[in-house]
Length: 417
Ligand SMILES: Cc1cc2nc3c(=O)[nH]c(=O)nc-3n(C[C@H](O)[C@H](O)[C@H](O)COP(=O)(O)OP(=O)(O)OC[C@H]3O[C@@H](n4cnc5c(N)ncnc54)[C@H](O)[C@@H]3O)c2cc1C
Image (cartoon, rainbow, N blue to C red; front, top):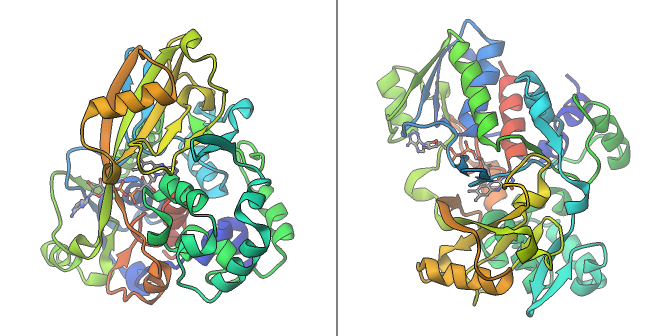
């Protein structure tokens, strides 16, 4: 495969380091630790490609999917973690291979608008936002970022906008987040593509199965992301060369290699690095209203809230965004993101804030989950690039946070076999 072929398959993911021991493909038995989306996709892709290879998938809990799950109550439905995907052909290929085409739809085109609450006023994110940031300042900081290792607050010289972007993706404020990790194509981290970006994008857009997504659109799955997890698990359980071990926590790559009697090169670790990796916590709430209670709220994707005095950092318009149903007819559903760093741990403070930002007396108000999110401090990507790989590492703790990264990375790893 030429470098251009790889760029067409993986796009900007090629900038992100692949943390694999090259001898992984010589394994006769492969041990994958973690059955989140990453471990599941790696097991699925590698096991399909190499039916002769014995694969053991170790998961510490009794469920699959890791942080991904979908909450349901009567006709209300809400994803606890990721709810949609942005365009990437690897994700489309996965949906196609799992025969989920009829469940997979582009998001509602009328629900594209995103806002940021700046000093109490809603600002719609668009190309005009550049003027809020300051185009000359931004140009200078983008140039400076190419030396590597800077934070997002240094890259985007408007603290509130930079914080909003980081909170919306990694639940952290911008001075704590690595710019190379969040925006590698802007900071030009890693290798550059062999042809012009516009030509490459055209070639990539021709490779999507199912449908070619519009620029800036997102797509989601009927029944929420749990539908995807159930489909991968169903495929894996049909494969004779994969054994799943539940309720089994691996202490370290070394201990699992010893317990399974394989060399370190045969361990694929898709879970955090233990005490060496810090994280932050977030609670997630679903709040639903009758249509007439919230008719003053414009249809859209959602609002980011950088103001640390409020417990809610983001309001996502779940029932506006997806083409599949998320609320009973005549109702709307919103998802609230509540970082623990700015919350007094009292549900009533979240409800009070939601009522002031959306509308009083919701029909439904439910805490639907708590999640831990890895931290990606400035210099993170350079550290990943230099990391030693006695075993291999994959998943959102390492060189990318999104599901498109996790899904694409599993293809890149399977390509080595
Ligand atoms: C609130 C929230 C919102 C998100 N929104 C988006 C979004 O809009 N778009 C997007 O692209 N991405 C989003 N993400 C990120 C996305 O969900 C992740 O990229 C992806 O699910 C990570 O999968 P993973 O397998 O790498 O990790 P995980 O899901 O964390 O899976 C790791 C698995 O390993 C298991 N495990 C852990 N330690 C051990 C051990 N020692 N031994 C054995 N097993 C172990 C865990 O139980 C778990 O099952 C969001 C995440 C959260 C939390």
